[in-house]
Image 1 (cartoon, helix red, strand yellow):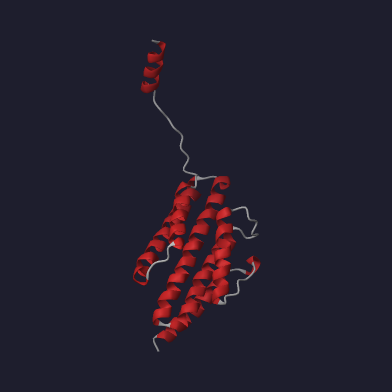
Image 2: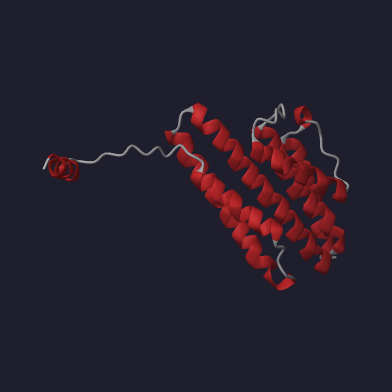
Length: 185
């Protein structure tokens, strides 16, 4: 009888469960999607769809960062923000690959400069997330070698973290724009 009374009291009592939004559940899901795309490169006919999917992941990562920044303490937010930066950097690297392949098909002179601009953007995101490259963020540590490898393959010299800036990224983007302009001539 006592057991039945406890169950009845438990069922009828209001239930409150405190769930924190300050976790990396969404971020890890986004990271898993990027990892899947990295493992399975698209066919030539699927490049545009892949590009759109990567853009969607970047938009979701930015939205998640905005939400978490508004509701989380710095202690909770900073490591998740680093993971989100790694996700976005990884999408930039995959977009570099897609753009290089697309420009190889239609304008070889622009392929490397365009890819370099994407890799530069990825590098800037990684450096901003962990400027001292402390290694404390596993997601950043996972993407750093990918950025370095792609940069080396493209002949892009990555600046030291102290010398990495939006200005440097802009220079890479301007070089890509100039190379694209020569395609129509």
